[in-house]
Structures are given as structure tokens and as C-alpha cells.
Length: 196
Image 1 (tube, one colour):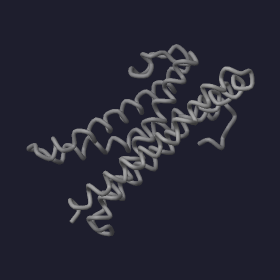
Image 2 (cartoon, helix red, strand yellow; image 1 turned 90 degrees about the horizontal axis):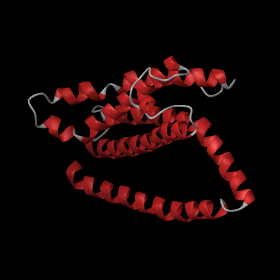
Image 3 (cartoon, helix red, strand yellow; image 1 turned 180 degrees about the horizontal axis):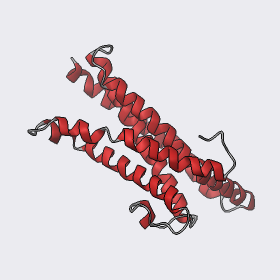
């Protein structure tokens, strides 16, 4: 039954993705065109400052939601197989949103010269705020591990140790406190206790 429903969810996800592209393309085009005007440049700068400050928060919220959806999708007691397939699709979609927010956060921090490219991958190399950027790097590296294990899950299922996927995938629980610690320093520095 779940196998028959899986193509329906894939079609739904494809339709959602196409809708997002159709909606976002004119918006991005208008934003690029508006950036040629003085008012457009002010708006673009304000948007960049906003994303620079809050893209990490968006990533943390989306990662938290992805973990919750993943826990729900793993539930065999309450959810029927069809509902679990739907929960898995939601988990994957939220995870992609979280990954996009995390990538936006990292790229904006690098382009604003608040971090170097190496800081995005190797922890504790930053010249300033070494500890807090380092724990953020550990969190993002763990998220990359989670994404990689999610992509190759089928290979784990066919191996001698199918439990290895779950062991690697639960590093999400380790990434979260590192991300909180990374964000806590930033919210303290910005005098914004409402962020964390």
C-alpha cells in the first residue's frame, strides 16, 4: 500500500517544487531589476542585512522541525504506513529547506567577511570568535553527515549492518546543541535574547 502511494507523494513534491520556481522566478527577477535603482539598492541592502542576521535562526528552526518530522516519520505505533510515507516526505522537504537556510547563512557570513571559506568546513580556525564559529562549523559538518547518510540510506539497508544508517543519522541530536551554542553567542552579541 505504501509503495503505491509513494509515486503520488513524489508527484506532489514535484508539483510543489514547480510551483515554488514559478512563484520565485518573477520575484527574483523583479528584485534584480529593482537593484538598479537607488531605492532598490537600499531595499537589497536591508534584505541582505536581514538574511545575514536571521538565516542562521531560520536554519536552526528548520532543522528542529526536520528532527521532529523525522521522529514522527519513524513512529510505527501511531502512524499507519501511508501516513509514515507522508511524514517522511515532509521530513525530507523540511530538511531541504533547512539545508538551503544553512547554506545561505554560511555564504552570507563568508561574503560579509565575518568568516573564511575554511571556517565553513574546518572547526576552530577562525581568527575571531574561534570557539563559537568552531561549534557552528561542527554543527554544519554534522548536518552534512546527516544529509549524506539520508541520500545513501538504501545502500545501508542492503548491507550487513542496516542499523549503521540509524546510528549515523542520529547525529542530528548532536548537531542541535552545537547550533544552539553557536547561535547563543550571536544573540548575546546582538543583545537579542529573543533569538534563542
